Image (cartoon, rainbow, N blue to C red; front, side):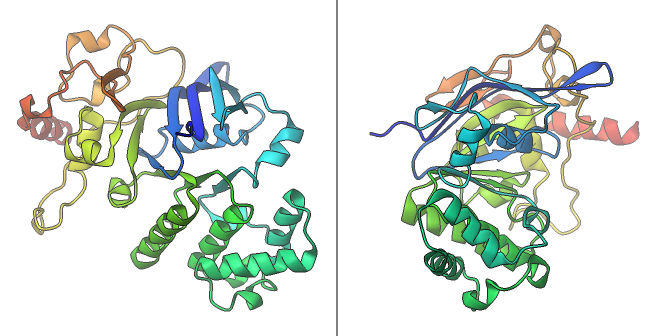
Length: 343
C-alpha cells in the first residue's frame, strides 16, 4: 500500500505579540491517506485555519512555525524554499479558501486566473489551458462555463465563486486539497451541493482531502476521520462514527450537546452549551487547556499539560478521564450550565 499523502508531526506556531508569545497551534499531529477525508473541527479560534496555512507555507511573516516534520508523499516541505513552494502550491497541494470573494483577484477575469495557474505548472498553450478551465468549470457544476471565463469575480454569486475556487484547486490534479470552511457563507441547499461535489470528485481522483469546519453536522456524511481541536491542540481523533457516536473528550461531548438532533430535540427545548471562553493561548501550559470549562475537572487536571493517549489504532484523546463515556454522569453538564447562567 502507498504511504500517507500528508504526515504532520509536532506542528507548532508561535506569534510574538506585545512582549509575549501567542501559541495558537501546539503539537499538532495529522495524517491523510489517498482518497481519505479528514475533517478538522472545533470552534472559532481553536487553530484550524492556522494549521492549514502552516501546512501550505502561507503564514504571515511574524509567525514562527516549527515541527518535527511536514511530509507530502515523503518530502519534508516544512523547510521548502520560496522557489520550491511556487512549484508545489497549485500543483501537488492546493487550498480552497474560506472566502472566495477575497481569495479571487477582483482585477482579473476568471479565465485569466485559471489559465495562469495551468501555465505556471504545465507546458500548455493558452487555448488548451482555456479548454481545461472550461472542462473543470463544467465538472463542478458552473452553468455556461465558456461565458464565465470572461467574467470578473464580482459578477458571480457566492455559490458560483465557491465552485470556481474548487475548479481552480483541481486544475493540476493535486494529491492533496485543503478546504477551509468552504461552505460557511452559503445557504443550506448550496452547502449540501458543494460537499457532495467535493466527495464525488474525491472518489473519481483519489485525492486526499482535509476539510476544516466548526460544524460537526457538516462532516457527519463526508468525513472518514475527525480531528477535534481546542486551544490549538488536538484533543480527540477517531473515525467519524467513533467521534460522533461515542465522544471521549468533554469538549467534543459539549460540542455535540449544542447541536439539535432531528427527531429527538423538541421545539423550544434549550440546547446545551459550553460555559466560559477559550483561554488566551500565550506562554507555556501549566494545566489541561480545557480545565476551567470542563464539568468533569479533577485536581489532577491542574498538574500540568495533558498528553494525548492512544486508545486504539487511530483513536486518541487528550484527557485524564477513563475512556468510557457511559460511566460519566450526564447531569454534571446540566448543573455546570445552570451555575454558569446563574453567575
